[in-house]
Image (cartoon, rainbow, N blue to C red):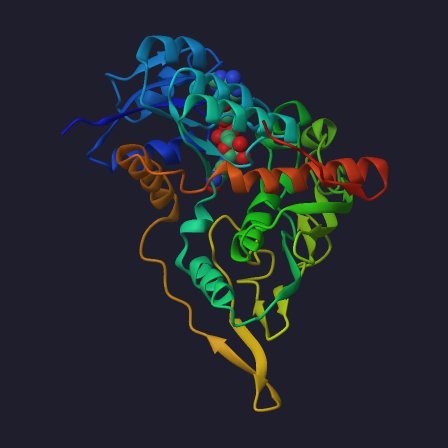
Length: 364
Ligand SMILES: NC(=O)c1ccc[n+]([C@@H]2O[C@H](COP(=O)([O-])OP(=O)(O)OC[C@H]3O[C@@H](n4cnc5c(N)ncnc54)[C@H](O)[C@@H]3O)[C@@H](O)[C@H]2O)c1
């Protein structure tokens, strides 16, 4: 059996979860790692006892030398685009960590390179593989809600500002909005079939991140991204999306996720305060209830949820490898995630200008 040869670009925190998943697969070989920090890739590979895997100080040198079939791009957000485009130019399939990019233009550059290379880019939203999230999508896609016209979603951490490269604009580009906001957007948009965004009106804040009371003095001094945002987004098909995302706030939750339709409504309650569906990195959620009419009487029906049996992170890596091996299309395609990125871009622009902005872009 010939193995799929995979290399890792960016050997930081989350790269370990990729390698752990690949090491479970008999049809995959992890052949190398690249990181711009001297010695980091070698130490990373050694920590997995991957003595035969080669280390490199740059993605380009690794791609030139190893010519992998596929790569995981696990760099911080601001270098997602350059590393993904480089890998595509070297003929590799890409599993790209979320968020897709920082800017919409970077995401469009990936789309262009992907089409030119004829390879796949799948974006690493592991909640998509959670059976609870799949059940929620199944209920919505069954048509039980009729025409959906309003969605409210968001995620709220009471206190949960990360550190490391997540809080500086030069590395992360965006804060809570992109770090966990992209998950919330993906959950809601995926459930309703990823309609195109049309306009965005938003506000972003950084009161907690910059505060020495709520953040360490060192991190407060370098904090240069958002810690909370709220947005009102008009989507194609007459749907409005009301969205909030928080790394920190004086509140336990930004509320349940609700889908309102002409024939029914679906309520997805938070799994626990601070980790509602949409703000966690799995599909965990509290009770899910369908509100509807029964013979003229408003009523509600609890939706039984399945229990996850497999690690969602493994499933996302496995789905990527399956697509590569079987020549299938990307499991989480950039044709959808470009809309996620366009909303993030719209939220950034609207917050900066203090006005509603339109979301307009064309692809070659
Ligand atoms: N899916 C998830 O559950 C999950 C969880 C955490 C992080 N992430 C995402 O994964 C990405 C990485 O997060 P992290 O916590 O591992 O960050 P990190 O800062 O720990 O690691 C990033 C690594 O990439 C390296 N790097 C940056 N630019 C590079 C380049 N051009 N070439 C080679 N190496 C480069 C850095 O030196 C660093 O070692 C982020 O986009 C983050 O949003 C996803």
